[in-house]
Length: 184
Image: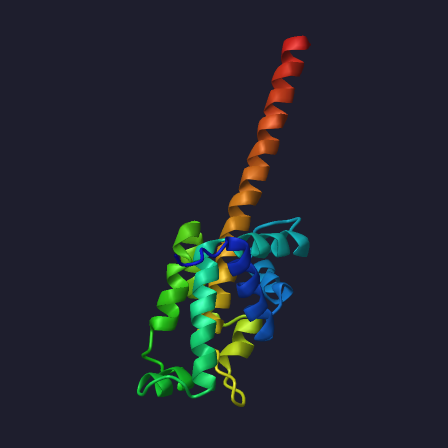
């Protein structure tokens, strides 16, 4: 019988790979902040970091990171078969598998995540721009899109959570007003 891998292991492995590739949780949170601050008055970096951390607990994201980063690393080592080696190594413009994997990991967070991913894929904010720019022997064909996916998911998650928080406060205020009217 094959060993069943606990999600704590895949989460730790995904986080370790992201860090190994030079990306911090804070780098991703900065993108989330950039995406959300125009819509949220009291947004904090702590909110953004918490949302990134929560997204990284999802198996779909963890698996996408494990597969994508592994392919990037194999391309750096020249271990992929041709023509895939050249396609991944050069981040061929018509190669869409990297975006497909990242986009597949976005669908669990709704339409906001999908549109935000598309925006990030085109605009290349923050660390995404750095990863997308080929420097030296590093290959980040998959990683730049995966980071965009994580940031898009965290942005969507945060937008929904903040709206829920606002609505809860609105409900409390209505209930307080109703209670005062009944008493007074």
